[in-house]
Length: 395
Image 1 (cartoon, rainbow, N blue to C red):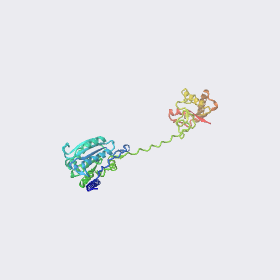
Image 2: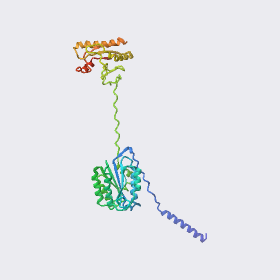
Image 3: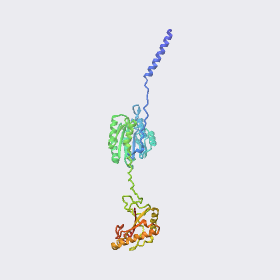
Image 4: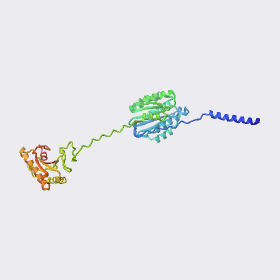
């Protein structure tokens, strides 16, 4: 190989080595994994608050960078992640920005969403459209907090305030405004703060604002960047676990009613009445809907015929059924007289059944006089009910 070819080969080797070294030394930039919001089961949660207000810092310091991004971008990405994690439940939402810039109506703070029923899509659009950054921080934040008191003046129920800021250049004014807001709403209101960036003074300032609310938390956007931590943040501020549904009441077992007369066995004083028999509250086969007999009479009243005919039909449907016809009286008269009268009444019903075709061998009678009354003998109505006949199945 001649000298010319040696030089050419050396040059090519040198160029290839330079390229390899350059490629090896170049840093490959990788993008952060996309945020994947936690999906709350809306059926398992209820709102912890009825209203919430997000106060977003759009002042000039938010144009500064933190970890390669402007703090304004970080703040919006944080709010977008919160918005995507927050389930659409029945609460009212609002978004207010602050920063001394010309696009703000009073050059300090502006309500850009709400107060109205929360919608993930509409709230996300409001975050996206929020302008900034520009202007200073301290006085506009105090004005934003004060304006929040007017925004929510008519709000009912618990309220959450979330302030998203780098906390830079704050003085006592926002803390005083937060204390005033707390006194306006009392225990219904909590103030939470989220630090954008890592400025130690800004962190302390926001912690003092949250402390003025008495029940809020103070965190950083860096801490809440993961889906799991954002889940915890959203749940703590906005959500409460739905109370478990009460266990179904144990259904009391249906009382047994062996003879199916509508009176359970434990209350039935006359078991084994035939199906279809008219019974009273005791479960006894008794003719109580009409008065069978007049006072001192053993003649069956005609008004009782339909009821007695029903009893005849039951006897015919149950050819093996035998009954004892029990006669009763009210307390008018002597015991001996009423005992005989009750037997005559039982006999009158027996004769009625026999005349309608019931075999006499299936019937027996017994008089009980004025014993075992079913109503008070002190009233006319009660005495009428006691002048009765009952049928008792017998074997």
